[in-house]
Amino acid sequence: MMDLSGKTAIVTGGARDIGRAISVQLAKSGAKVAVNYFNNAQDGQDTIDIIKANGGTAVAIKADMTKWDDCFGLVRQTQQAFGKEIHILVNNAGGLVARKTLAEMDEAFWDYVMTLNLKSVFMMHKATVEHMPENSSIINMASLAGRDGGGRGASAYATSKGAVMTFTRAMAKELGPQGIRVNALCPGMINTTFHDVFTPGNVREMVASKTPLRREGTASEVADLVCCLASSHTSFVTGANIDINGGLAFS
Image (tube, rainbow, N blue to C red; front, side, top):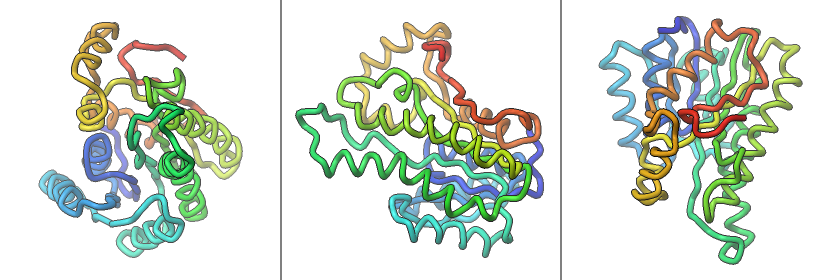
């Protein structure tokens, strides 16, 4: 268990699946956690209940990560709850939205996917960085799709996640002199409702069979890696886009 005592963390999209696992694990490690949700207050409350049952401290904050004012509002509400300094930012909010080929996409769809997955990361950096002291950590959620282009109908999603990887490297260079580390995770097939909705069962079985570890990953495994990157144990790691895919692909 990493020791994050005295740290304040924000987890966007932190109320379910990978985001919930991250929120819970950060709190178990001692951080005070602002759990962001968008349209499901019950998910937010359920996550808070889990954290409190494990002796942790957290608040649920509703905010739309595609909106400038909401991003800054999330930071303000976190400060009201836990104090002015933010030590950990996890940009987990995002999604595929829908599988659409080039022929099926219109401008509005493309723009929304880019805003949800990429612009949201930019806006949260803008809102948070000025409140981050030295030795703070930002972890962005990219994807294996950002490396390999994704599956059929995922070109917009894959492009946005590839851009998150590039933005991560750029911010690592820019914010490094301030003592702020910026890294990203590139998950492969993780057992979440994301794949329950968007990936057929036979495809999931095929991917798992081609993965050297012969299984899907779990949200808790992603959360463990996030906590490591948030801690002093990785104090010389920045600008990294770290694969977590069971050996399915190598960078």
